[in-house]
Length: 118
Length: 118
Image (tube, rainbow over all chains, first blue to last red; front, side, top):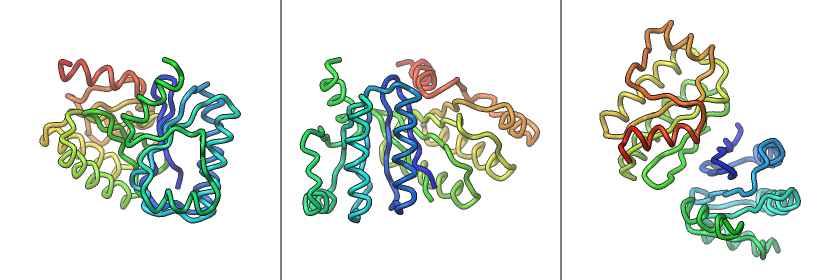
């Protein structure tokens, strides 16, 4: 399977709503970076509201994809991080310190707008 | 797999970017109707830009889901219908005559806004 990436104006929106396996995560990373390159998106919202739990591999991919997007010039906002997901990320040393977070997709877009000074 | 449904204000956004099998289509129908019920969404944009071809079953499910959403009070806009998909729909007698269509997600949201008199 492939995680759909929606383009809305200058932003890319992703909602992860199923448990994802390692291959899907890697594919998602590639797809997102390719789409940032292709569309010239300046912001990305990754919504994790429906993700109850993540394993170390997925957590690492997620941390990496945020850093990689940043390098490419697209600001990432993570939204809807659940308690167990937050615990896994910190346990694994993935602090995502400069990554803005928000409650849901709407709030994430508002945050992105603020971050980008729009 | 499950097709993610994104909620943005009063609208639900869906982008179908992979070939979907019958089971996924049925699951999508159920998920979308449940989400309309749960969120009270007034509009739905289904983006088919990445769908190159559909079979008769998926076409029927798509036609049905538009009618069902309409019954539930949510207006559906279809966006990015490719030539082969348009041909399949018409060949199967699925005319979707009262369904607004648009080029892409952005245009779809604009159309929805007009349709709903916003």
